[in-house]
Image (cartoon, rainbow, N blue to C red; front, top):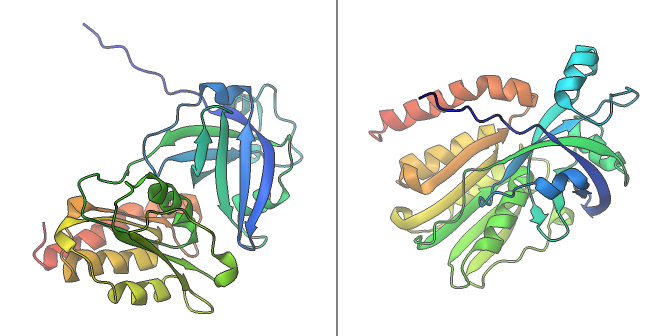
Length: 281
């Protein structure tokens, strides 16, 4: 008997409902619209979606459909995709919240979010996800830069009331710190990068932490360069078991998302080789 192949759902149209400036470096965009009635949220706290940004000035066929756009519109005018963490999905209002890091006028997603107004549209594909807090963990460790802040915030909000742990989040300065809800036993600390290279302050602060390596549940995400350093620190120097560690580079300095995806396999290979050299499986 031939097994039926499940067709991947087409990206959904999402419409901006409202925006909120959270800090000088982060803006929140809340999306709604009829298509989100069928949006199925993930149980993962690092739930992510692929956002397809429409290019300004292009007359796209309506209703928005990615397959139709690719069939009828010149390739150079196709929407451009970027991956973002789901900060929240309101199952009652059917509203999707995405927090965008702003880097001035550079990039695609940040400038779009800074200009976004109610009624603006894009396409949403997903969600996916791979991490949720382990309820059996003794200590929860969250390390990341501002790109990982939405996922860390979601994870903190999902922890049991008696959880113990530490979150270290690197931002540029105090103006980018945000109020985060966490259990009393989980300390949330902010590390200021200032003019130093991204991640350097976070790596230095992590070296000072004490935690039970054998029973930690660690989530480490952000710029690929410092994430590689933290992977070596946690796996080789501290002996955190691989199965207790969710770690990945969300982005890489000087690379587009497409470029970073193309080089990610090599990044993982190099990190694996470091661990093998240290006698780790």
